[in-house]
Image 1 (spheres, rainbow, N blue to C red):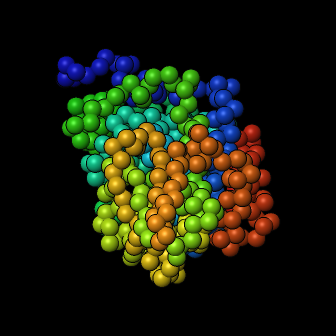
Image 2 (image 1 turned 90 degrees about the vertical axis):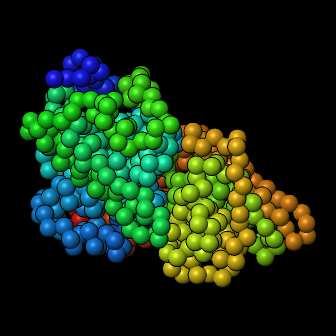
Image 3 (image 1 turned 30 degrees about the horizontal axis):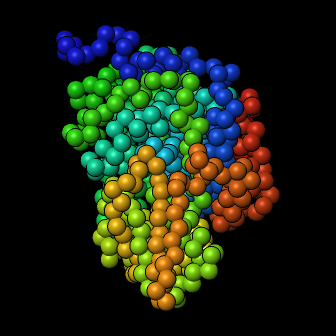
Length: 463
């Protein structure tokens, strides 16, 4: 028997969302959203190619036994849909260079794009199906991220991983044209597949890298189960033991209205942020400040001390333990270190894939400067609603130079242009060992996909 607080049929949040997603038609998708989805596809594909030879990607490819007809970008072998989603999702997120969301940091495209592409390739769907699936999956992830901001992090979970499984189920279910009932079941099932703890922070290990890929394949499997009639709880969001109870903390109350309010009128997914730097989201504004100071003439050898004003919620991931953050033990650990990012920005005036390598994390000049970087909590910092950075450098002559970045560059307030997205794409495919002609073909395919009758031609990008 249903409990008294169980909503009547048709009123559960998952039912409301599924009814909207199932009725969505292509004409209702605004141009801004289409442009963002195209940029997300281009960015995702370039990132997947860039990491194809990395050891963590090769380990997954070697371990996956499922065979099929689906494409993992840059890999000669074909995979089943789950394997392609897992590999593409892991590769595109592996260097933490993929897009993010400013409401609370979740990486939408690394989860949704590979899940939807794999489903559409396997089941013969159209480009417009892929567009709708990407739009709906990313939208649900963004909305879930702002229901209880910071609660998942504080509970010890990686929001992209746990929210991503449900978002992928929504995206795949929409692309495959599931009925509202099937889609509700898919969302309910996906919540039981959600996983991903943030203990990767302890030693810079690989588990965060696999989280989006694992969420992508989990959501894909949940959607197929829902389509087959496997039942999941329709109160998956607001239930007594629902998602936000399981992955939350008592002192942050969920605002469930954020899942369904203004659906189709306020597209959160159109405002995802594309990263200019190959590192953690909240490190980015501080690197902008560091590069600005360097370009204004501040020399590393003249710096006595560097103070960063930070949001309290970022300290446990980006500043502590301070000894590790000042001298990262691995290149991956360096990506989640503001001291290292600031030092690299001041020394190299860059923070691309080339700044987070074994060679650079041992560079004496960078490490000496990172050792001078400290933090102070700013009670007025807007995190997680806004990602800002303030860097104050005290020089040996006693003078003080400072820079402030009021928002994340690449986000809604200062978006990257399509030319900047393409420049990043070409740099990433080059890093992954592709010839310009291969990159040209892939960028053209991405630009045209959402108008195409199928995903035909994607198999050309397996090599």
